Image (tube, rainbow, N blue to C red; front, side):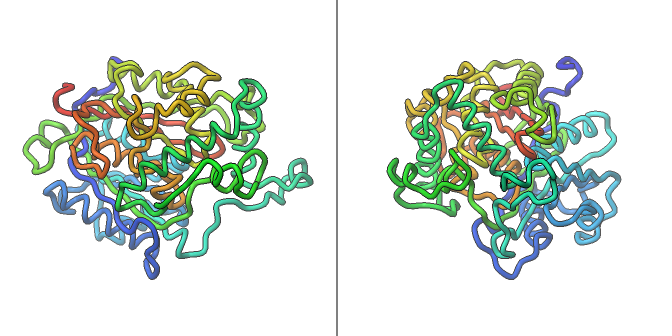
Length: 383
């Protein structure tokens, strides 16, 4: 399969975020359209150039149709893949294949949510399932708590290790003007925060924000002639092992093990080659699981890996350099924001810009550790 993927032949030509934090008065679609407009402009194109739309809105199951109508477009292709926060990595994969085949010429991938302004919550109680309801689980939070508890039992991971993820995210956010949550955060703050679903406390949970994001993809030979530095897509893969975590044979292992390996094989790289990783951190345990499953450290060692400062500013593997879902933003789904931060690092324009970034990984998670998708982005020097 790695031989058939168009490595580096398609690229991100434009990108943008809009309304990160709180944007009262905007609908989700209005936020999305603003980000889309900025991304198309960033690419030096117009909406007349866009012939494919990829979208996954939180509150519209027919978003592919609504988005086209809102923008006044008649796209040749629309994709409304709804795998949750991983959908946008899958959008990139299918857009790359369609572009390579000549089926489309310019893809717009977009997302927006007014979750915070609209009074949305991070978790809701499960009441419809006969077997689960008596235990008052929270969706999706309790599923992640189960994974965290099992990881602690099997590998000795401690709440201090989970806290290290939150502290690293806040350290990055504190120097990112776009980040919603900034300010002091201590280990004691994390350990003493209110428990929600043991062992997950408030500080282990992502934010609830508004925000929108969009990227424009086209063939790399065309992107070379556009105003912004192209960010070639070197590899992309998705994997789904279950929907409900109750069906997982091992809750400490995710399909990121498969999506990451396949994406890196397509790109011709290994975890050691990755200079920065942008991981979907809906909860602190996510970062630990994905670091292990993507091959950055052995299974069971993720807690020690993060507690050693590896992912924080100054560490050897900068992770979620914008502050991630824990401290930058999380408007219902975070995947596209992870992609944009990876691309910004390669373009040399991130708020917390790292020196000489030519290879970045962005990883998305959907459902309750259900759908995993990974993309490998590079600079033109990697072609």
